[in-house]
Image (cartoon, rainbow, N blue to C red; front, side, top):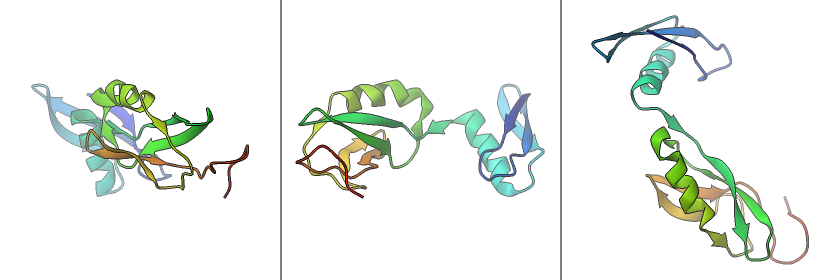
Length: 121
């Protein structure tokens, strides 16, 4: 048995997941089907969205994230790939920094100009 709090919506249902012979069996406590799916996914193949920063050509750091969650077991390898990148400016929100990291793209989450000391909206 494993207990989880669903994070799909603000309700935060308390979920109880049952296993049989080490395999997912059932979920209780969910108020909707999304909670049951969340519990099954979290217990069988958890994924996470990675948020971090990359270096830019002028030494500043740019905030980035994976555009879809990646398998949790690949987070450290993903971070190694991201840490090896230095991106050129200018950058706009949504620009792809790395094309394929475990099935996800690493994208910029902020705008950054080439010249000057700041960001722009």
